[in-house]
Length: 313
Image (cartoon, rainbow, N blue to C red; front, side, top):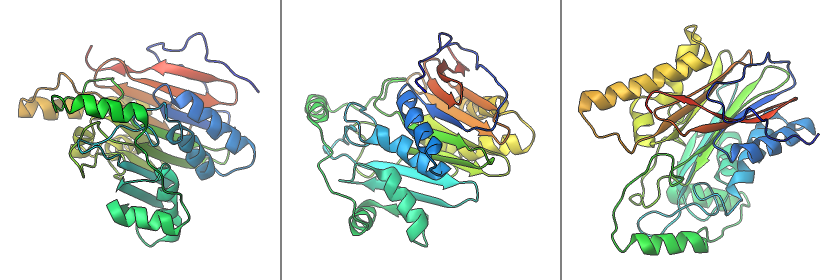
């Protein structure tokens, strides 16, 4: 069925509808609209929830116009594109890759790590070698626009993340199927012009993503160092396990990050953090440190882009 973005999209208040059991996808940022659709079509065609999560994220990874994920991701300060991703299911099975070069679909490599190795995470050259052994194609990930931006950056070589500017936005996707199973994944090229070897929260189970099949799931986007410092995704799921709604759990996690900043008297004027969460009942939540964080929802009857509420203006 062809759906369009609802007229109430970008409302600051989540639109809550009872979960009817057909399936539900919740994804960070505007590119989540396209990724949700790919995930929905995969699930609707008989694919598993993990298949849907993988395909939804791959759709974003393979789009060179998306400048913070996969092919087209911005490089580090050495001009090298390195990618991070992880995936997790309702049973706690997980796979992850980080600082991987030359493979455009890290979410698929992460799933292969989960299903074909005794490990959870492979890094750097080891991740790349594993991907090649599994038949993944190697390619140059530095697209023309990224190379031009990197060469412009070299003129001053000043590292400065900017809130809500897509130089560090992660695609994080959560899903719930008709049988009540949860799964999630996330993928990113990390912060533009980062130090070579820098890894953020996105491939870290418990930081950028966490799934508890008996409770709920959460994924994060934004400044990864602060999400790692507070074990953000696990913190949100733990909140839900203690009885908080997904919305309240996201809010508590953002407030904890704000408290860390205040305690250290750090400048956070250019920092953005966003969480999305989903529980087994199909209730959703989203919250950000500051305004500007969008997220997409897809189920049987709707596809919507919503604006998350935030702690700061």
